[in-house]
Amino acid sequence: MLSIQEKIKTALKAHNAILVAHYYVDAKLQTLAEETGGIVSDSLEMARFSQNCDADIIIVAGVKFMGETAKILSPEKTVLILDDNATCSLDEDCPIDEFSKFCDEHSNRTVVVYANTSAQVKAKADWVVTSGSALNVVKYLKDKGKKILWAPDKHLGNYVKNKTGVDMLLWQGACLVHERFKAKALIQLQNIYPEAATLVHPESPQEVVDLADVIGSTTTLINAVKNRKEQTFIVATDNGIFHKMHEVAPNKKLIEAPTMGESADCESCAHCQWMAMNTLDNCLDAIQNKTHEIIIDQSIVIQAKKSIHKLLNFTI
Ligand code: 13P
Ligand code: SF4
Image (tube, rainbow, N blue to C red):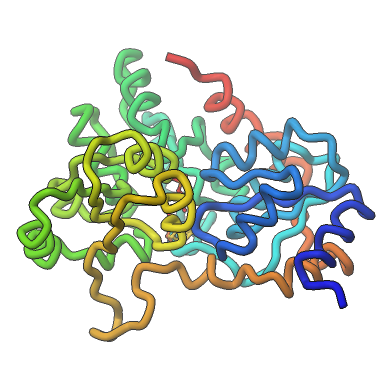
């Protein structure tokens, strides 16, 4: 009998479909994406890859905003996600009506939004940025004398604001997962492992970012494990990333940064509940039954594409 992985491989081929996966999803899906010619990457590279590949169907193992970005960049392709409920607290924290009102009240500011937003919010923005590009884009806008309205992640916004000194008005959203990392417990862990380097995603609170040796996107943190001389790393981001980190540096020791969830003993505090909705079973279902297709209004696609293209064309 065929394994579920074999069934997915056969179905991908039969439908000229490609699987793209984020570093936070189930390791089995990451492996499958790479084995079948797809990609495992951060949110920006997933979209770039989808745009450039010649598949008819893009299967996005990640969360809804990632599927929407792929659709905006490749409107002629069918884009499927694995579960309609796989959202993101940052996206949920920034409903379009309130956000539009906020923009209209501050129309003198350039609107910069994080990729973790709905297609409608992206359509309202002047620029879309990712964790890997936010600093450089904001520095560029600073040189042009711009004041910024930033949404939705207050922690990433605060980090960029402190680093660049730009006048930034911040929307008050947060990532449910990164907000659980706690500075006091992290200091205790750093004292136990003084030889370790601490890697932090900038969606984490400022006091946690302040304790980092490396701050950056998922790709930056993986490269740090691969390239830095330390043998031990304390990692403050979703623990789905450990799969790729182990793969690129099998002999290095990885330790989860301490978290505190809604309940003190939450089981997988450092794992995104929405990323966890991506399973092999619903991957097969998505391909065979074309479930959870991303549909976006043409007018929104046209507007959102402009702000995403600014990022894709941005070079420093
Ligand atoms: P990256 O763009 O760094 O992969 O981040 C996406 C994300 O959702 C982090 O929580
Ligand atoms: Fe959103 Fe945080 Fe989950 Fe990333 S980890 S998808 S930012 S809730």
